[in-house]
Image (cartoon, rainbow, N blue to C red; front, side):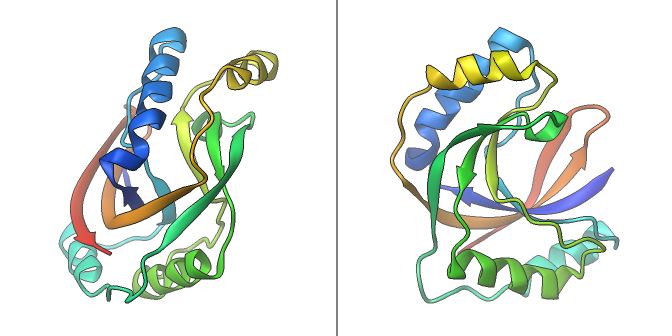
Length: 164
């Protein structure tokens, strides 16, 4: 069991991603999970304190958009097929703020929105990506949330959410 902090988006922004996620889940029998971008992970504290820390997050005066750069894949179970996100000053600033609040043990950051978790071969992934819908190139971040992760049981649950 672990915790992470995610960015969430408007339902309108992720509706086409959801179609792709459900298609991949059905075709390759993968788990279903909330569509998100992980900002930070690998920190320890009680759930109560982690929720309090999220409430200390200060909203930005600017809207934060994520810019996309197409689909991608890796040979990692939890980065199998995803939407690539470009690094921007606003995204880096948001990551720094969250890391200051949560003080994670690791600061690894690979911005992406996972569409499928699982182990399928690269040739199949590449073939599937060619058939995906072309998406708009930016997504508005609407919320930051604290998620509880059970990667062994393939369950993820949002336990606290704040508006951005």
